[in-house]
Image 1 (spheres, helix red, strand yellow):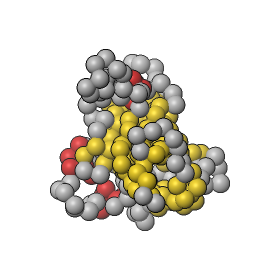
Image 2 (cartoon, rainbow, N blue to C red; image 1 turned 180 degrees about the horizontal axis):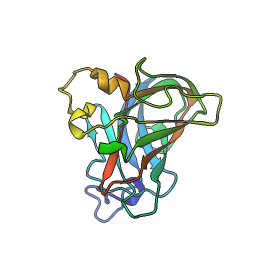
Image 3 (cartoon, rainbow, N blue to C red; image 1 turned 90 degrees about the vertical axis):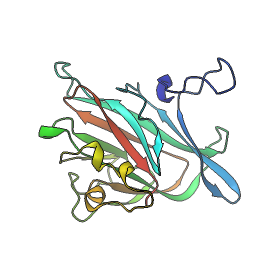
Image 4 (cartoon, rainbow, N blue to C red; image 1 turned 60 degrees about the vertical axis):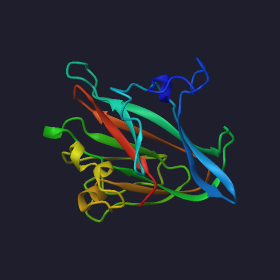
Length: 212
């Protein structure tokens, strides 16, 4: 129910009780016997094309964002997200000493339009990993800056998404070339922006999860 946009508007079995305007992945880890959840919230207005792709397939989570439409006058659409680790079934932040997050499937539509980019807020990022032959541009992050952005350079389609891989199969070479892994230390939360360049009539999906 990110941004209150659904698809799950009400709490199951609780009548008209509204779901929080977030995405919660329950039990993403156990530390010192304590279960941990991951809550994703939008910092700015969230405008999806559809929320039916806001789901988890295998270990890959997805969030859909509407692309700028032809004639809209917009050069890009973006969503500013906050990821917070909390104690299970609560909103109490839980500081993790060290953890890694991976972000997948940065590509474009045909003709190089609707380019996907991710702007990393570098606070608490201590290192990152890109494939030696990454398709992302630039092929590095500047962790000395407050934010650092990478963008897709090649066309992709749904059938090459990591979520379509057979169960327990590793990423393909191209999937690794379109991925970014970040290591964070001593924090309960981090922020990023995902954006889509002009122009496309539908949306594109932002994919993330734990490194394989």
